[in-house]
Image (tube, rainbow, N blue to C red):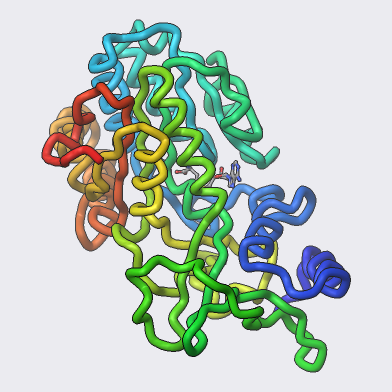
Length: 366
Ligand code: SAH
């Protein structure tokens, strides 16, 4: 257990209010205004704690530009349109995306109002630098973006949203809580009171000790995206790692220096915390809000459908041998099954009258 600056804050909170939910722990560890992981640092890049698809290769943002341009065509090219990204990190994805739109869909590039949803001041500054010269607005929440036609992207955003965890204990389920252990002088997990009816029927037979996860924040966001797509033409794409169907499993993980911490409570505020995204729950919420949900499909499948291989060949033909090799390795990491190709999934949502978005043609809408 490290004595991080956030630890005394958590101890005081627990002393005053009793054990806190995993969701409250996660929200504070990532988003505490002074000591939260994302609020104090830039975790990306080669020396950072982790790296993401847009940081690996420009091809990722270029492919998503193709996705946006084709989705915009399918909506009959409404202008102006809000181009929204949730949790843009260093701004690399949006920079690659709009640079590509300049070339393949200049009307969209000119008529799109870029809205970035970001809580971290450190990362906002990075995004500002990456998008210098563009018209960009920043918001703390999607609710602040004006109504109207919408293109929305979110890469590795939903996995950072707080989850609650429930533990199977005998016949019932108890919420898993975070408590301070005075004897051991460290944060520990503890089971709370028994809860009735919080778990889907599919998990009725889960064995003792099983963990079930939910995210109220993710659900609320999916609901908001769905309502916007139902009210005006639009398309959204969410890419992340997670599960396709409801399943038991403790997926809360802490990542520090590119390594998984054995204990997610060991270094609050100094390790990234993530959990698998529940794609089935997102689809259900989107469709309940009257949008159409598509997929999820694999990231590899999506990028191939968007022409990553042809684009790689075109770029490699113009590059020197070392650059060409780097481009090929990057593309491989994005699409190969032993890389991110099948581990990462892409879920799309559209307005109800729209056809399958690019890459999702083989999917039945929900
Ligand atoms: N999409 C980027 C970064 C993913 S990391 C990429 O692919 O590289 C998660 C991002 O979401 C960071 O920018 C983080 O600061 C932001 N973030 C995390 N929780 C957030 C919240 N509740 N509201 C807004 N932004 C959040």
